Image 1 (cartoon, rainbow, N blue to C red):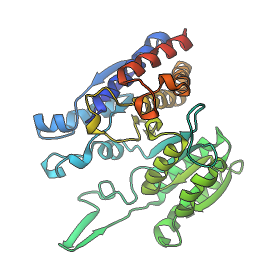
Image 2 (cartoon, one colour; image 1 turned 90 degrees about the vertical axis):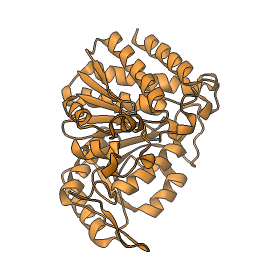
Image 3 (cartoon, one colour; image 1 turned 60 degrees about the vertical axis):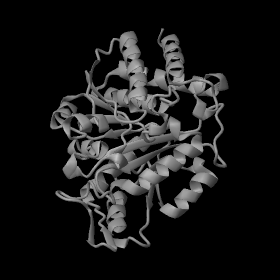
Image 4 (spheres, helix red, strand yellow; image 1 turned 45 degrees about the vertical axis):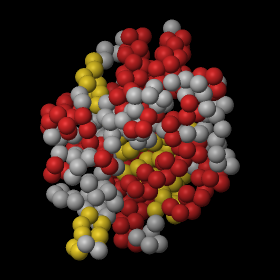
Length: 357
């Protein structure tokens, strides 16, 4: 089982090393037969080879059974024609990773910031929408006819809407059987109308799952006021990006925000947060987001290939993080604790070892 590790920029190499240490431990304890291949990407690769994502790395991603991508500093990249490829977007589109799955869950001992605890999953369409780097076959979905006029195009397709809806309803069946579609159809009548048309049609195939709809602006408010009413939240690309960060921060910290980008045949683990270059090399980064994302990758492999050991490893990682963040003495600095990246990773590995025996 081949796992490709792409450490990325900023704190990416540090937290990718932590995730790799955890995966190696789980592999040894559960005999998962994992093998790891690491490739440099991002600013360091750009300086050396003139591109942030060489074609050989993309081909390695296609061949891998799973990918772990560290945070990248895409805003600091030059234009694409000068080698600045958005690594995350490129992998999502080229591997057709249409489902960005982002859970948000309040954890015992860690304060949450909304009025009610959170336990939900944002199911975000990942390959179209307002994102200018993934809604055109060639060129960008943004353009400037004059120096004082900028335009942006949004793409919504029936196929993209239908398949993310089907993934959301399938996930809800394994949770609390409730799907909320978030939209802005009162303003974006055509694109949101197409999205909702497809979602409503898919809902007919899942009569055992409760379905409702919510405007995106009221959804943002309801996450603060009454988040516990939501289970699986289904939405388009940009709305999902924003709402998932809000939900994760309300649940305790964006530093605990796990995520996978999944398609029919590929899956990539990726932290919700950015590359935080100001923290790079200081041993202060919280690796939990990427570690928990790696656990989600193991769980995806378990579900798609019926491999129970992978599910056991994912659960052990999740419970070990819960145990550490519950105690202020074993939290990282961003959560008010005393531990640096390496010390937290060591404590996490000890917890996992105890749970796996």
